Each structure stands twice: as structure tokens, then as C-alpha cells.
Image (cartoon, rainbow, N blue to C red; front, side, top):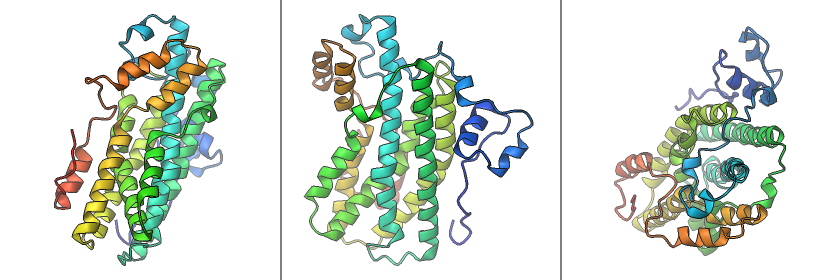
Length: 318
């Protein structure tokens, strides 16, 4: 990964897959690799299938709750569409407000590790990738709004849970070094774990092909980013004293819980906009349920990373 880091490029895609081709061509219509596509590429809107779901119903936190089950088919469909809009907002906001600022800590070597130019190239390349990911998810949400003919405004949703939690953690951090460690920890958790988040949708055949292809394209880059983030976190942590390693570990634990949890704040806003009268009561039931599960449950990447770090045993992966 060191001096041989390749220059930034658009996401790799399967030229024989019309959905992936359409997504990438939307990113850059004059990109040279389009010449390898042997047939005309469809527009994203041409690929929208109104008979398919926008989001896996089973992943809705209230999928088995009586209030949801009593809704009409159209109400359920609208909530599934909202779930996809909220999913994309979550990805986009984490990229913008969590991942890139964390990478910037490394690019500027704010912790004084002396990582060298190879690290600056790697993280700046990753930051360019993240801009493409943001645009892909924005395009996917736009395609859903056009395909359904529904407004579904992302701006009506609150700041996402991970962003809110990170802001609180930064407010509590004292001094530039603790702030930098907190930013690094949140970025590391997001980059090492995001493929588990993306994989929640990518293999569900009942979901829109546009949505699944967007996630496949994103995930391919993120497997590389996870390696970069993990290697750089190891390099930084090897220079920290016990107190600083504790700060990093505590911040990572906080980040992990927010990243993996259902964002009930977003759902309260959605249910209110949709006029679901007993929506608040349903969310209250879920939040206070002892059987409430995390949305993301695969922490294998983080386990491996913290094992390599000598594993601060305060990290609870349950």
C-alpha cells in the first residue's frame, strides 16, 4: 500500500452489468472507461422497478410491531422508501462529517506520528473516493424520489446518530490532541465497519437493483479503505501512551455503539411526517425493549483490529 498507492479513480464496475454501468456513468458521463461498454447504457430512471422494495422490510426496527403490521400497503411502502432515504443520508453524513475529518487528522499528521508522504497520498485518495460515494448515494435517493413520485426530503431528517454522538464526544474532549484521537477513533470505526452496514442490503433480491448496485460499488472501495484505516490506526496507536490509548479505545467504543444502533430519532421524524398517529408510542416500545437489537451486529473487523492493537479489553462487542 505504501509508495505504490494508485491515483484516485472512479469506483470499479462491471461493464456487463447495466445497473452498475448506469450508476458510474451518472458520476462522470465522459469517463474513458465507458468505451468498454458494448451497448447503450440505460439511465437510472429506466432501471427503477416500482414492484420492488426500496429497503428490506425485515430490517425496519418495527417490522413485527402491531402498529406497523396494521398499516396499509402504501403506508408500508412509503416507510420502506423513507428507510432507504435515511440509509443514504446516514452514509453520506458519516462520510462527510466523520470519515473525511478523521482522515484529515492523518493527512495533516496532527498527532505527530511522522507517517510520511505515503500516508498522506493514501488518505487523500480515500477522501476523494468518499466524495464519489456521497454522490452515488445522493443519486440513488434522487432516483427513488423520482421513481415513486414522492418528495421524501432528506433535509427533513435530523442529524444522524453517529454524527450527533461524535459531536458530543468532541465537546467533551479537552485539548487538540484528545480531539484528534476522538476524530481518529470515530473514523476508524466507520471505515472498518461500514461494509457490514452496506452488506445489510446488498444481497436482498427483493430490493431495487439500483439500490443494491450502489451498495456493491461502494463496498468494493470500502474493503480497501478498511485496510488503510486499520493500518494507519495501528501506526498511530503504537506511539500512544496508556492514557491516550484508553481515550482512543473509549472513543471507539462510543462510536461503535452509535454506528451499529437503529437511529430512532430519524424514525420519530419520519413517522410524524407520515402522520402515523401511534408512531411515537411504537418507537418508545422499541427503545425500552430489552430485546431490542443492534442494526449492525458484525464487529469482526473491529475485533481483528483491536486484537492487533493488543486489544484494549474495555471494548465490548456484544
